[in-house]
Structures are given as C-alpha cells and as structure tokens.
Image (cartoon, helix red, strand yellow):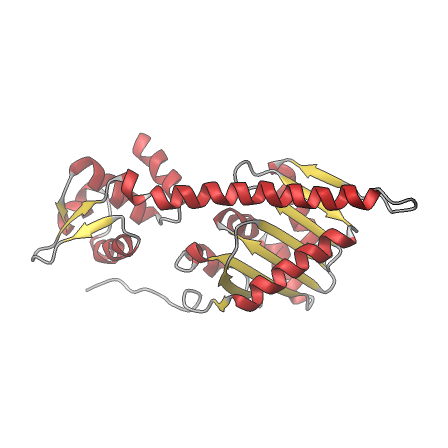
Amino acid sequence: MQNDNLAISLEEFGLSKYEARAYIALLGKGPLSASELAYYANLPRTKVYATLTKLAKKRLVLITKDKPVVCSAVPPEDAFSELVVSQANRVEGMKNLIEKLQKIIEEGRKPKGAEERRYLVLSPESVLNVLAESFTAAKSTIASTLDIWGVRLINQCKDSLAKAIANNVEVKILASKDLASNNLLASIPDGAKVRIGESDTNTFIFDRSAVILVNDSDGKGLLFKSADMMTNFCSKIFNNKWSNGTDFVQVRFIKTTPEN
C-alpha cells in the first residue's frame, strides 16, 4: 500500500504508472534483470524495455550493455535534485508574479476617478468549476501557460474546453518543457493549439478580459475580471513565450504497440 502511494506521488513528477513502479522496485531490490523487474514491479513483460528506456532518458536508472541487461536505480537525491529545485523556483516565480500583479492593482487605485480593481481568491474545489464555466463562456480566445498541475486541471474539465473549440474559440496552450514527453498532453481536445516552451505558472486568459492564476503548490487560484492593465500584462507575457515555443505534435499521434 505504501509503495502504491509513493508511485502515485511520483506521477506528479511526470512519471507514468509503469515508470513509477519500476523505479520503486529497483530502489528496494537493487540491480535487476528485465525479467526480474517485470516480476517485482508487476509490469507486463512487453512494457519492461520501453519503460526502462524512458527511465534512462529521465536519468532515473542506469542500464548495462550486457546481455541480459541489468538495470539499477539512480539514488533519489541525485535523480530528483534538479527537479526539486525547478519546482521550488516555479512556486517562487508564482509568488513574485502575484506580488507584481497586486502592485498593478494598487497603483491603479491611486489616481482620482480610477476604476477599482478586485480579484477573487478561489479554493482548489472552486478552481475547477470556475475554469469550466470560463471555458464555456469564452467568446473568442483562450490562452494558457501550464505545468503538470495545470494540464491535469484542463483534463478534468476538457468537455467544457471541447465545447469552446466547437464554438470556434481559438485555444492556445503553452506547456512547460518537462511535459514534452508526458502522456497527459495527448488527452487535450483536438483543435487546441499546443506548444512547448517556458511555462512556470498556471495562467488562463479569457478573451483578454479575465485571468485565472492557479498555484501548483496548494491548488488555490486568483480570478481577475475586467482588469485591463493586468490582462494586458499577462497577454504580453503569453504572446512572447508563445512566439518562442515549439509546436507539440509528437505525442498526440503516436501509438505504441506491444513488443513481440
């Protein structure tokens, strides 16, 4: 049971279910052959080599060139150190962005006759409902920058996103680089334009008139409506990152087949 919980937690780091099981088994058992790994990790034999290859690319396992191959786990402190730093930087970046946006709101209140700007704090449960409603209500454009947390949010309300696409709303999604090989992106509804690039916050911009920010550390969100300065600020950042991104095509159309 404990290992199952650990495997689920590792999926938050971008590992598939099989990859998580294999890595945990190698940590517990030490170096194993492919057949032994299939047994201890409860993996289909046809998936073992593909799983090991993906783990090796992520620098989580070492594979010998001997036949039969023997694989061993890279210690967690070495395997995940860069990823932990990246996640910490992402949270810090989110905090800094919120502080900058708050300053824009405060500065907008200073001059006489200025329109008062407000935002709503959303609980993790409310974030999904507000996102789904915003997808459905969008008239022309939806633009978002996402990490793995944001992609999971989109997948949970993808029916509403699909309706927006069917209503000819232009949908642009910029996913973080660590998601380039993640199967989560393949479930984004057809018709959305997806690119890989610099994405360190979960930002959703609707018709350039509303913005939702979601913190991936606690799932809470901020909803800004009719905040022209802030939406323009977020739109400019998005457009710059979007122009520097690369189109995502490799995962959506690839189907794997079992080995003989």
